[in-house]
Image: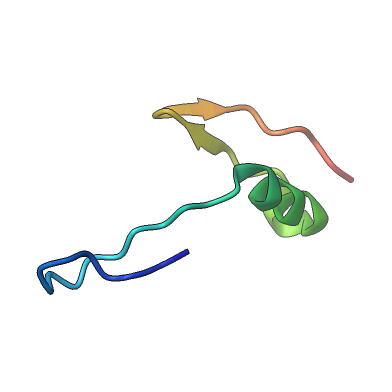
Length: 49
């Protein structure tokens, strides 16, 4: 969900479902082998195809 912060600063706040992001990434071979950052640490991807 994206929206503006109070005060008109124009900043966006994202509330992402990381499991959904991973499912989409896994479904696209070009993205499947990229690393995902979790709490600032790169997580090794699972090899697909």
